[in-house]
Image (cartoon, rainbow, N blue to C red):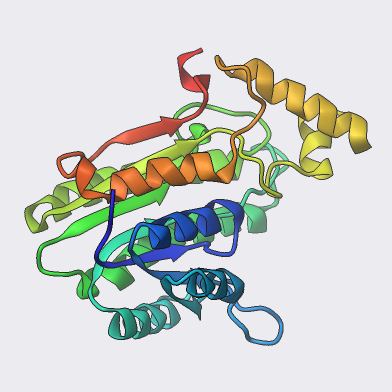
Length: 264
């Protein structure tokens, strides 16, 4: 599995995003690593790009707020101009806000929509004018929460279901251009978004080390395979495959990477 084009990755500074960047670069892709800027205006994904370049790969980082279409379009155009036409997109940036339908703050509902849905849509729209003529592939990050229900995270569940609808619409529209579109649906992944004390307390009612241990057991019990959570690299391999020519006739698919959660 090798690549010979530019691939744009959003949420590139995070656990899954950075793992995908590293894997794609190791397989020959020219990686455009996009994420927010830090307080000093430096791209949060710059350390990811630097590490790739140190290993002999090709990568540039850019700061872009997915909620600002003009800024995102400018950043995408700049990396495409520098690295060459785009052959793939991994629209991965997202956030997880707790709250039931009754107690979720309206602003947190809106943030889930703005980042997880509109931000994903903005990402695809910014990339499409720069796709190579022969097409390519787009992978959108959904979640097992985008394939089933889950209490306590109303905005997240809504947004990840919406991403599936977006994918299906895009797959129909972009198929004639030989651009494939699929979603990936991870279960719990060992990243700060999931493996943290606040999330543990909300899911298990326990705090501190006891809460983390209980969270691990909670997730292990949800899976068919005897694991609590995946590593980011496990998701990265699935994403890379969907982006690769090895999946050249696969489009409109929702791919679980879930240790059997949805089958249980």
